[in-house]
Image (spheres, rainbow, N blue to C red):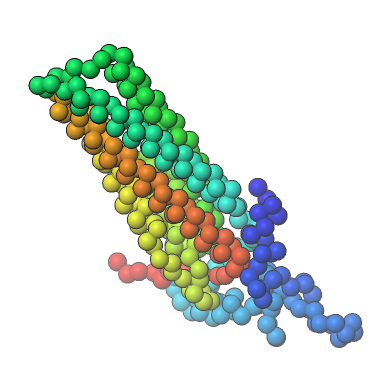
Length: 309
């Protein structure tokens, strides 16, 4: 996807007062004022008597004379707009698929409630007395709903990882110093046993920080982390409870245990719906943050100082 098709990442959607200026200098012979573009970011007009815009000049002054980890004390060169890739289309696809996940969960809850009512009505002394045809139909409905859940989950996972990889690469351009993990972990972190309970959050946290609005030349901005934190808490709780409920239901033999297992699975499906809704809010918010950050244009961010150990 090129930037011209995206628009929001291109100069046509630059913030007010910060559009691209013509690449020329003032010329009295023509009698028309022309402006020089900043030699660092290439998007803002250079100041009078300088080849840099006010933001880049301020960032360079802020970083002068400091010893930074992994740098020589000079503020890093800002990114180029054509290096960014739009996450908007992928974000829309992720949100649609997450909606499909929620619909599949609703169907699973309905099928589970139907099975539970059928079994509860036929429970007698710890044993079930249910018509075979009714039981077979209920079982088929429940299995079908489960298969639909699995298909929507797999499709959503693939597209979500592609989206996360893209926003992680953009975040590397916004602020390479905001990340605790390398870009490859945007996908790999999800496949680490046990570690996938917190490593993907580390990745998403770095992307969130790098995509937040900058608060001034050479500075880092901030954005409320509620959508990120609430989504991750719901996701972890959903995964843990799903594993526990699935194992309990698979091992249940007595009638009462089977009914409890169905109740637990219904609760997990409801929690999964909540996690899907929160994921949609997270994806939309982070995508909007990156769009805003890209529209702002290249804004140098000072590296973090070297910490004493």
